[in-house]
Length: 327
Image (cartoon, rainbow, N blue to C red; front, top):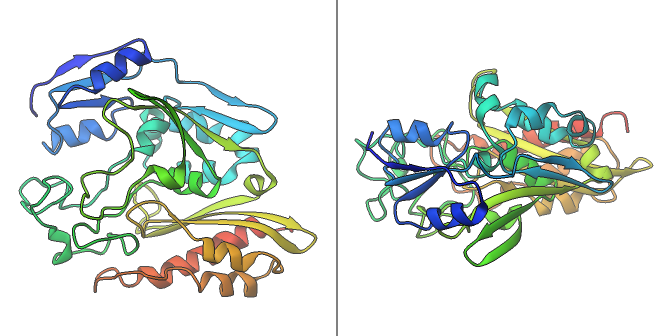
């Protein structure tokens, strides 16, 4: 591990100034950055500790859930109001990592979670455009079972690993930031970037910009939501495919729907074609299957990960069945 300087600001402006320095990295829970420091993947000159900032609030108003960026994953997942009004978010968080890691990991850190691509995490592998721009992508000709099939490019096929972000995408979350150019409120769908020709850039955050909080509208759709994850083992494993869905039901018909996928995209992946196909349809297995069949258009697969196309469709059907139960 390379030696680095350390700073712990107590105000946003201080953190932003420190974060603008070349070679600076932010840290909160440390569950990812410390791992990458040990692997020598991250080699910062300065680590800026955000835990002194006032962003650990969790508040529910009549129509909005506000989640501070420093709220711990376990606190959010177990919060009574989150369990009652945003079940997909709680389920997604509880499906990730282990209790010990969830006790440390923060919402802001999860939002910016980096890929678990084994080639990215192994500095002995030269070809990784995400770690070393212009060097190539070892996964394109290597073992790629865990890699993305949506939003990929000929520069990178790494998958976004976050469970929480898939739920936030389905729940119409806004990401609130503060940076050198002021405050911004960004739809979660616009926060992460596709690899394109610059896979080293993973979000729209500017140098020094910090996440302050996330807001989610409190709706009937959020209350009837669910998260389903398929993985190789029952715990502490990343998704092969996952789905977060929300349904607003009137009578026996679907009035509104939200569907997002994880484990299959280079970023959390919204499925508007599936959502549109569900509107006006009865809450039944046939409706779910017909709509899910429209997902995964444009998927670019390898021999190792082609199974994800059908798996993702089945996960959508299962998540819709869970969300629609009892309607």
